[in-house]
Image (cartoon, rainbow, N blue to C red):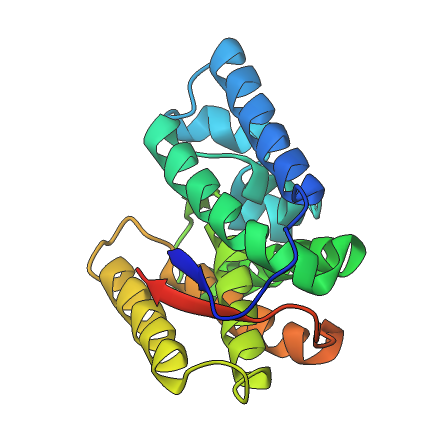
Length: 211
Protein backbone atom coordinates (compact mmCIF):
# COMPACT_ATOMS: atom_id res chain seq x y z
CA UNK A 1 0.00 0.00 0.00
CA UNK A 2 1.23 3.47 -0.84
CA UNK A 3 0.19 6.03 1.74
CA UNK A 4 0.04 9.68 0.66
CA UNK A 5 -0.46 12.67 2.89
CA UNK A 6 -3.49 14.92 2.32
CA UNK A 7 -2.46 17.45 4.94
CA UNK A 8 0.48 18.03 7.25
CA UNK A 9 0.83 14.81 9.22
CA UNK A 10 2.82 14.24 12.35
CA UNK A 11 5.76 11.94 11.82
CA UNK A 12 4.75 8.44 12.80
CA UNK A 13 6.82 6.86 15.58
CA UNK A 14 8.29 3.40 15.29
CA UNK A 15 5.48 0.83 15.67
CA UNK A 16 7.08 -0.86 18.67
CA UNK A 17 4.44 -3.56 19.23
CA UNK A 18 4.44 -4.46 15.54
CA UNK A 19 8.23 -4.76 15.52
CA UNK A 20 8.12 -6.95 18.65
CA UNK A 21 5.46 -9.20 17.09
CA UNK A 22 7.55 -9.56 13.94
CA UNK A 23 10.67 -10.38 15.97
CA UNK A 24 8.75 -13.02 17.95
CA UNK A 25 7.46 -14.60 14.74
CA UNK A 26 10.93 -14.66 13.23
CA UNK A 27 12.43 -16.03 16.44
CA UNK A 28 9.82 -18.79 16.64
CA UNK A 29 10.44 -19.69 12.99
CA UNK A 30 14.21 -19.92 13.51
CA UNK A 31 13.69 -22.06 16.60
CA UNK A 32 11.30 -24.29 14.68
CA UNK A 33 13.79 -24.80 11.87
CA UNK A 34 16.56 -25.46 14.38
CA UNK A 35 14.54 -28.15 16.15
CA UNK A 36 13.01 -29.73 13.05
CA UNK A 37 11.19 -28.54 9.94
CA UNK A 38 8.35 -26.04 9.63
CA UNK A 39 7.13 -28.08 6.63
CA UNK A 40 6.64 -31.23 8.73
CA UNK A 41 2.97 -31.31 9.81
CA UNK A 42 3.48 -33.73 12.70
CA UNK A 43 6.40 -31.70 14.03
CA UNK A 44 4.33 -28.50 13.76
CA UNK A 45 1.61 -30.12 15.86
CA UNK A 46 4.23 -30.72 18.54
CA UNK A 47 5.32 -27.09 18.23
CA UNK A 48 1.80 -25.81 18.88
CA UNK A 49 0.07 -25.58 15.51
CA UNK A 50 -3.73 -25.71 15.46
CA UNK A 51 -5.03 -29.26 15.35
CA UNK A 52 -8.67 -29.92 16.19
CA UNK A 53 -8.28 -33.23 18.13
CA UNK A 54 -5.50 -31.76 20.29
CA UNK A 55 -7.55 -28.65 21.08
CA UNK A 56 -10.93 -30.30 21.60
CA UNK A 57 -10.09 -33.70 23.08
CA UNK A 58 -6.85 -32.87 24.89
CA UNK A 59 -7.94 -29.35 25.96
CA UNK A 60 -4.68 -27.87 24.67
CA UNK A 61 -6.12 -24.36 24.56
CA UNK A 62 -2.71 -22.73 24.31
CA UNK A 63 -2.86 -23.60 20.60
CA UNK A 64 -5.35 -20.76 20.13
CA UNK A 65 -2.37 -18.45 20.62
CA UNK A 66 0.67 -20.46 19.60
CA UNK A 67 -0.77 -21.30 16.17
CA UNK A 68 -0.53 -17.74 14.90
CA UNK A 69 3.14 -17.42 15.82
CA UNK A 70 4.08 -20.45 13.70
CA UNK A 71 4.50 -20.59 9.91
CA UNK A 72 4.84 -23.25 7.25
CA UNK A 73 8.08 -22.32 5.49
CA UNK A 74 9.98 -19.10 4.87
CA UNK A 75 7.67 -17.74 2.15
CA UNK A 76 4.66 -18.07 4.44
CA UNK A 77 6.52 -16.17 7.15
CA UNK A 78 7.84 -13.40 4.89
CA UNK A 79 4.49 -12.70 3.23
CA UNK A 80 2.72 -12.41 6.58
CA UNK A 81 5.41 -10.27 8.19
CA UNK A 82 5.41 -7.78 5.30
CA UNK A 83 1.64 -7.44 5.62
CA UNK A 84 1.92 -7.07 9.40
CA UNK A 85 4.55 -4.34 9.06
CA UNK A 86 2.52 -2.33 6.53
CA UNK A 87 -0.73 -2.56 8.48
CA UNK A 88 0.91 -2.13 11.87
CA UNK A 89 2.72 1.03 10.76
CA UNK A 90 -0.65 2.71 10.33
CA UNK A 91 -2.88 1.04 12.89
CA UNK A 92 -0.62 0.91 15.94
CA UNK A 93 -0.54 4.68 16.25
CA UNK A 94 -4.24 4.98 15.48
CA UNK A 95 -5.22 2.53 18.24
CA UNK A 96 -2.45 2.96 20.76
CA UNK A 97 -0.13 0.12 21.72
CA UNK A 98 -2.34 -1.72 24.21
CA UNK A 99 -5.55 -1.61 22.19
CA UNK A 100 -3.63 -2.50 19.04
CA UNK A 101 -2.15 -5.57 20.77
CA UNK A 102 -5.60 -6.56 22.06
CA UNK A 103 -6.98 -6.21 18.53
CA UNK A 104 -4.23 -8.37 17.05
CA UNK A 105 -4.38 -11.11 19.66
CA UNK A 106 -8.18 -11.25 19.85
CA UNK A 107 -8.49 -11.42 16.05
CA UNK A 108 -6.00 -14.29 15.93
CA UNK A 109 -7.77 -16.21 18.70
CA UNK A 110 -11.21 -15.71 17.18
CA UNK A 111 -9.98 -16.75 13.74
CA UNK A 112 -8.50 -19.90 15.27
CA UNK A 113 -11.75 -20.75 17.06
CA UNK A 114 -13.83 -20.34 13.92
CA UNK A 115 -11.35 -22.37 11.89
CA UNK A 116 -11.56 -25.22 14.41
CA UNK A 117 -15.35 -25.09 14.43
CA UNK A 118 -15.60 -25.17 10.63
CA UNK A 119 -13.11 -28.03 10.25
CA UNK A 120 -14.72 -29.96 13.10
CA UNK A 121 -18.16 -29.53 11.52
CA UNK A 122 -16.84 -30.78 8.20
CA UNK A 123 -15.22 -33.75 9.91
CA UNK A 124 -11.76 -32.68 8.81
CA UNK A 125 -8.60 -32.80 10.92
CA UNK A 126 -6.43 -29.97 9.64
CA UNK A 127 -3.02 -28.84 10.84
CA UNK A 128 -2.97 -25.08 10.49
CA UNK A 129 -0.85 -22.16 11.61
CA UNK A 130 0.14 -18.67 10.57
CA UNK A 131 -0.46 -15.05 11.53
CA UNK A 132 -2.87 -14.39 8.66
CA UNK A 133 -6.01 -14.67 10.83
CA UNK A 134 -4.70 -11.89 13.08
CA UNK A 135 -3.45 -9.92 10.09
CA UNK A 136 -6.82 -10.12 8.36
CA UNK A 137 -8.19 -8.83 11.64
CA UNK A 138 -6.01 -5.74 11.15
CA UNK A 139 -7.38 -5.41 7.63
CA UNK A 140 -10.94 -5.55 8.94
CA UNK A 141 -10.00 -2.93 11.53
CA UNK A 142 -8.48 -0.71 8.87
CA UNK A 143 -11.72 -0.84 6.89
CA UNK A 144 -13.62 0.29 9.99
CA UNK A 145 -11.08 3.09 10.60
CA UNK A 146 -11.60 4.34 7.05
CA UNK A 147 -15.37 4.25 7.46
CA UNK A 148 -15.22 6.06 10.80
CA UNK A 149 -13.07 8.76 9.20
CA UNK A 150 -15.02 8.92 5.93
CA UNK A 151 -15.59 12.67 6.26
CA UNK A 152 -11.82 13.19 6.05
CA UNK A 153 -10.97 10.43 3.56
CA UNK A 154 -11.78 10.27 -0.12
CA UNK A 155 -14.64 7.82 -0.70
CA UNK A 156 -12.84 6.26 -3.64
CA UNK A 157 -10.02 5.26 -1.28
CA UNK A 158 -12.44 3.44 1.00
CA UNK A 159 -14.00 1.70 -1.98
CA UNK A 160 -10.61 0.67 -3.34
CA UNK A 161 -9.51 -0.82 -0.04
CA UNK A 162 -12.81 -2.70 0.29
CA UNK A 163 -12.30 -4.12 -3.22
CA UNK A 164 -8.70 -5.03 -2.38
CA UNK A 165 -9.89 -6.85 0.74
CA UNK A 166 -12.59 -8.77 -1.13
CA UNK A 167 -10.15 -9.75 -3.88
CA UNK A 168 -7.62 -10.88 -1.30
CA UNK A 169 -10.20 -13.13 0.34
CA UNK A 170 -11.39 -14.41 -3.03
CA UNK A 171 -7.82 -15.21 -4.05
CA UNK A 172 -7.40 -17.29 -0.92
CA UNK A 173 -10.54 -19.25 -1.75
CA UNK A 174 -8.93 -20.43 -4.96
CA UNK A 175 -6.22 -22.22 -2.96
CA UNK A 176 -7.31 -25.33 -1.05
CA UNK A 177 -4.25 -24.97 1.17
CA UNK A 178 -5.46 -21.64 2.59
CA UNK A 179 -7.48 -21.50 5.81
CA UNK A 180 -10.24 -19.27 4.45
CA UNK A 181 -12.40 -19.66 7.55
CA UNK A 182 -9.63 -18.04 9.58
CA UNK A 183 -9.20 -15.22 7.05
CA UNK A 184 -12.89 -14.34 6.86
CA UNK A 185 -13.47 -14.61 10.60
CA UNK A 186 -10.33 -12.54 11.19
CA UNK A 187 -11.76 -9.73 9.05
CA UNK A 188 -15.08 -9.88 10.90
CA UNK A 189 -13.39 -9.92 14.31
CA UNK A 190 -11.11 -7.00 13.46
CA UNK A 191 -13.97 -4.97 11.99
CA UNK A 192 -16.20 -5.46 15.05
CA UNK A 193 -13.42 -5.02 17.60
CA UNK A 194 -12.37 -1.80 15.92
CA UNK A 195 -15.86 -0.46 16.47
CA UNK A 196 -15.34 -1.04 20.20
CA UNK A 197 -11.67 -0.15 20.66
CA UNK A 198 -11.02 2.63 18.18
CA UNK A 199 -11.13 6.30 19.04
CA UNK A 200 -10.62 8.69 16.14
CA UNK A 201 -7.28 10.49 16.13
CA UNK A 202 -8.06 14.00 14.88
CA UNK A 203 -4.37 14.86 14.48
CA UNK A 204 -3.84 12.34 11.69
CA UNK A 205 -5.44 12.17 8.29
CA UNK A 206 -4.42 9.61 5.73
CA UNK A 207 -5.22 8.79 2.15
CA UNK A 208 -4.75 5.46 0.49
CA UNK A 209 -2.81 5.92 -2.72
CA UNK A 210 -2.88 2.42 -4.14
CA UNK A 211 -2.30 -1.31 -3.68
